[in-house]
Length: 284
Image 1 (tube, rainbow, N blue to C red):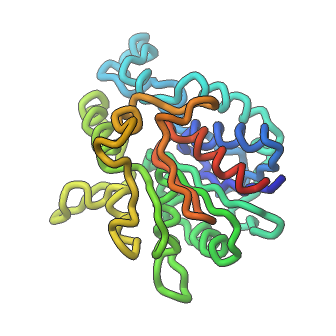
Image 2 (cartoon, rainbow, N blue to C red; image 1 turned 180 degrees about the vertical axis):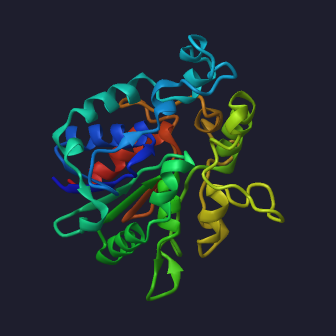
């Protein structure tokens, strides 16, 4: 069995990508170590836990507690149950600080995601975590990244080469199609915070989608074709790309995971069971 280090931001991480990964790994007998920026227990994006805050009436008394759009975008019951279990776990309640995190005795580094800018930017932009990710690839521990966690890896530049650690790797990440769909929807329903679903937005003169996760990750790769997505028309294409179906502990059909040897990647919360299981099997 192995030890897995999971760095997360102090707030706004995705509950499913962290908690389901934790549950899969610990149930398989692996040891999980959490690291937060402050060294205090983190907190997930509350909107992704409750679903409240994504409807046009969200700011109103009483009505604001009734989610509609949020029911579709928040963590599903499995993800919420895993999050509640994780909150009570000893490892989650006693994280280490990013500055104290090392890969000594660690077999895998798992980079989860989230999208809310207020918490995720400190994580994705952290020089401390960039160095940790570079060290992970250099030591050849297994690195696993999902959703915006792939963006953290893409921004981690190896000083020996001047290139991203993902250069020469095959990867997936949150696709622009998925990111754009959720962004368009929440721009209308959460009109007072129109970019809630975009961690980074385009500057004047940049093409639409230039700062999307897929675009930035692709720019870090050796070949744009190294960014992998579900091929249109392939078996199960709609199930895998609709943003509606999510995998479970017993059904991996909706998931899309790229296994590039010592590096594993996935797109969004709906891939997490399969993603964490692929990582777990590498540590046995």
